Image 1 (spheres, chains in turn orange, brown):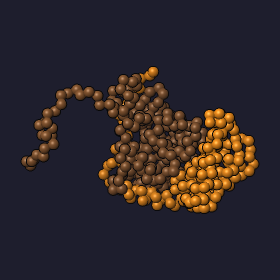
Image 2 (cartoon, chains in turn blue, yellow):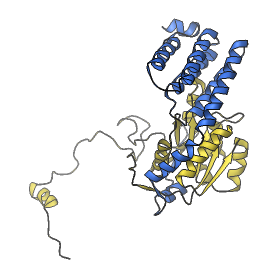
Image 3 (cartoon, chains in turn purple, orange):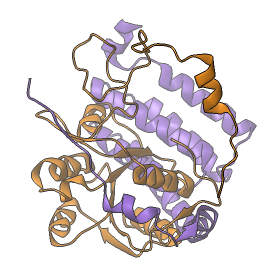
Image 4 (cartoon, chains in turn orange, yellow):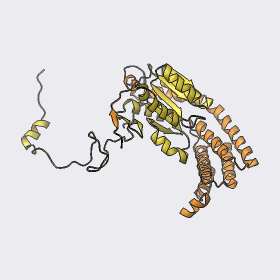
Amino acid sequence: MSEARITKVVSSLARQVFEPGGRTVRDALQKANEELEVHREPVMATIAATLDELDAVAATAEPDAGPRVYELASAIISLGGYFDLGPMNEASYSLCDISDRMIGANAWHWPSIHVHLQAMRLILNGGCRVGQTSDALLEGLHSVSQRPVGPDEAARQ
Amino acid sequence: MAKASASDRVNLAQSSVLLVDHNSQSLDMLSSIFQGFGVREQIKCASTERAMKLVHQRNVDLILIDSAMPGMDGYDFTRWLRRDTPAPLRHTPVIMLTGHAAQSKVQKSRDCGVSFVVTKPLTPSVLLQRILWLAADERSFVECETYVGPDRRVRNFGPPMGMSGRRAGDLSAHVGAATEENMDQASIDMLIKPMRVAL
């Protein structure tokens, strides 16, 4: 086994952050949240457009569309992840998770994808708010994603 | 690591931050957050290839990179930075932003040498907390054949006593037998006794 070289490093960031001046944490966060809020509407529009694209991919159901489904679902997490979109984040995470497992197991199952897309559409139309509807939808997605994907997962259960 | 209170101060007025994300909307949102934090300079890159050129041309104090970039992804960029660039560039703190962690990427993420992985949802509060953690980071920088980057062990306990892999500086929850005589009560009393100080 090779010898590990261990060094103490003080980064330039570490020297700067605690220098006198700057902003209080409260001010920095308030300003950052204000700056971020400007992006909310355009992001919601992009998420709606991405869901349209996912629907189109699912409608054609090409046999090699798995990676594209994962990529688009990831894009929703990537953008929606800057805001508190609660159920939408959870549903898109579930879609990523199940499509990643299906790609890995080489066992694609479109009905599971369709269920996710319908749930995400309903959540988006409901303003991504937490409530009985979103809870019921997420519970449904949870039971879909718990099912074994491919023969290997089925054998392990 | 302690959580910063609202009245603590953070000074990024002298800091240059490199933001790398192929998604322009995401890049703009990150930029807005850092604007709010009062960062002196933000450099935005839409590709890792551009970021590679840039870090050779100028100093940056912090790099934020999205994990899922087309072509060379955020993990490979960090691995390149840690292994194939000279110090102090290779020591630059890197925060990796990730959405869903694909099964195939988990090991890559562990081994690439990032300072912190931040999983979305990402709020300004979480990001600022990680920056403060980085600034107070006392982890050593480890370089060996299989890994280059900040020590992945946040607590410096190391493997249990007597096992291979322990380092000289490792702490242990195991106190062990006393090596010196017990202090007598008078000495203990003297240590905690209030004393008048003549100024």
